[in-house]
Image (cartoon, rainbow, N blue to C red; front, side):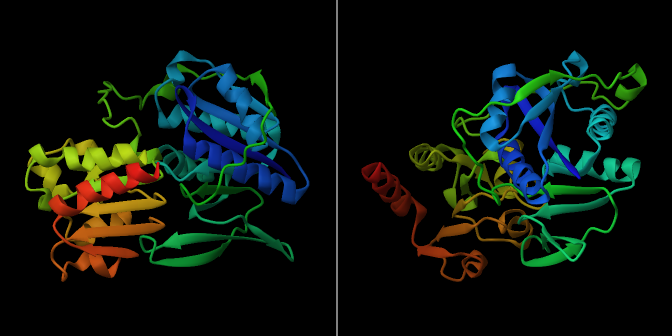
Length: 325
């Protein structure tokens, strides 16, 4: 039983979530007494792919077809399926990202495989059963799922697995071609609009997030959010009402109708905690809420709460973080 890991790359580098997935796949392979091979999608440098050896990957397959630089569901699915067949992979591991879950469902149909998304732990293989633990109900509950088909696909939740770092280990990078035709790119986007991320930390990959709501009172006060985020090395985010009134760009909107995040630390500043917002952030490991209203619903979901005015608390909190650095 071999293991294939799907590695997402952007601007020549392997994404942080894929480093976690690579570590997960390597540990699954070790438990099964086999090796882990990766197949890379997106734009990647050979040096970045070779560094996956530090996560326990022995070999990386890479198709440098320029049409694969941007995500195309049909082409990515065919590429990964071809790699799985070449490597006779019985376990395929992906990130629980937009790409991972979208491709994962297509792969499950194409390869007649069992699929589990939002997985948070390494699998248990006991008595012939292959069981994984996955988050449910927006992180409020967990379920154990038995994958019954011979081929199994696992989408791993971000920040649930710590990436391994075996310094000095390198993976062998091999050219790979799925022999894609123009028809495989029929669902390619007609236009890709790039938006520059402020703060330097991509929101979907961040393990710390500082987020603001209507309690910030206006975009002119957002420097308080950005200063704390910079001190922590965190990404910035906002609630839906904030992006709706154009205080912040829509790509920073987190929640049920925006980006779902699961960082190690989520700091909510001046956000009341509507259920739609909670649905997108309550998978965070630690939630800190700052709000002057002690009855704000968000406090019921918080691990730590500060009842106070964000304009008094944020400068003091930022200075405290700087003092500890």
